[in-house]
Image (cartoon, rainbow, N blue to C red; front, side, top):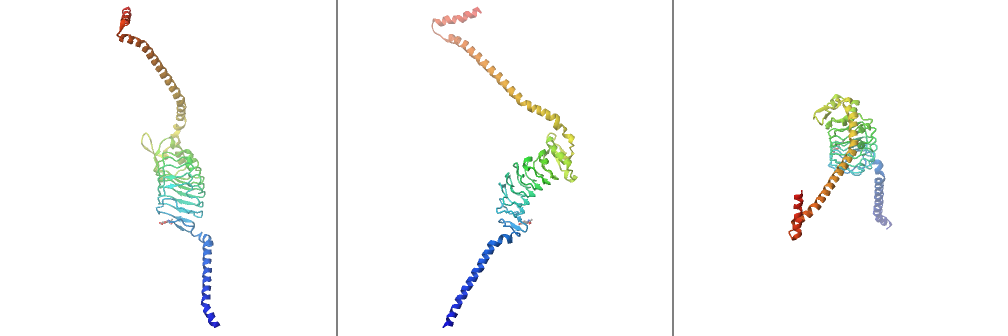
Length: 335
Ligand SMILES: *[C@@H]1O[C@H](CO)[C@@H](O)[C@H](O)[C@H]1NC(C)=O
């Protein structure tokens, strides 16, 4: 009787034990998933942005995925971000916020037209930035200023016509700057002066103008001689004669006329043009005003003398008219 009772209870007890074991193991798995993910997986692949592939050492590969924007979910463990050959057209403020550990950023061959002045904020350790083969026409002042560790910057193959010194700011470590295949005609002196470590400057494929504005660039090129193979493509287009000249062929003497006599004359013209034109316009106004007032005064005077005469001549009635009509005739005979 007792034996049969135990034998009946045994399957139920074992079932209970099995359930308990299952619960315990589930709890352990759940705990592992919540506590264990971050430290155990992080060195292999940081939480990977959707559609990209991530590999050891924080490399995130989002190449050629037709992405329309910078992917979300970037974090500080990412060291290299490949976004080349996508359809990114704009970089909003803080586009790479959270990816403060980024060293290498490739944005080649996208459709970039606008880069916000604060797009690169937070990328204080970035060393390599490639923005080549995009559609950039202008850049805002201060765009690259946060990138204090930058060593390589490519803006090649865009549509830049102007590169003001304030756009780059002071980049103390920049060694390579690629500007080839744009629409630049000159580089301001301030731009090259704020890049003390610059060693390689790629310039070909731009319509450099053989003018005084080219002087800072020619001076820099003379101080940083490159192999002949690189410099022979650097030509400038003379605005008047439409001829091509070698950029490196200009000695400093060629720019002598740019500074002293021309500048002094220009300054004199600029400074005298304002007051002279003001005085001239004042004189013209006065003359015109006096001529007009004189004319209107004369007309008024003539009208006061002509009108009574006309009225008298036209008036057909009465003896007064006859009397009056005789008067001018008398005046005429008198004259
Ligand atoms: C990135 O991924 C693409 C294809 O997804 C591949 O062709 C390319 O070689 C990868 N680049 C690197 C540096 O791993």
